[in-house]
Image (cartoon, rainbow, N blue to C red; front, side):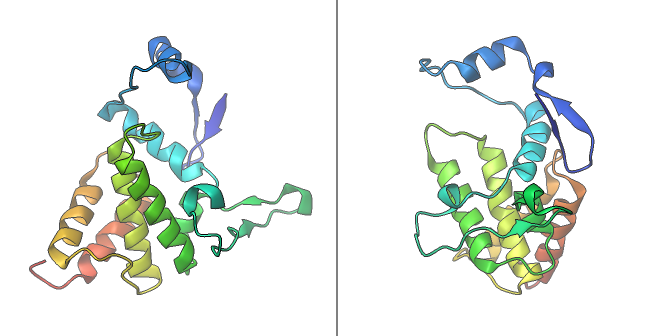
Length: 178
């Protein structure tokens, strides 16, 4: 099963180590699947290419359905992806809050479906998009904590350049000394 990442190159699940896939696919296993930093780039690219789903973004039934990205034919319409939302010029603030909440819940769950490093980066990327694209701060973090989180996210070696640029721009908007 191949998937296309944000840069347009392809990566393949067949390239993953067999022991990793065995543990990942064994629904009866109580052993936790551990990811290492060498896995984060592929996981991040996969997360950015994943479609936004209302069910994973919010338990709030009032949240609107994610917008769809139009293609040339109506049949080919597909939901907006996490990456497309983060790159949008004016993303819906409700969806950014939903992504922030989703990332926070992934970070807190003991049965994490994505590594903590990925959920933290997704959390701060959503905050950055809110700050830069919507001129809104969608967190109760103080400026110092926000600056630390944005700095760590921007420094992640596996982060794509579009997100790194967005996070650095948000960091630059914080008051000096944060």
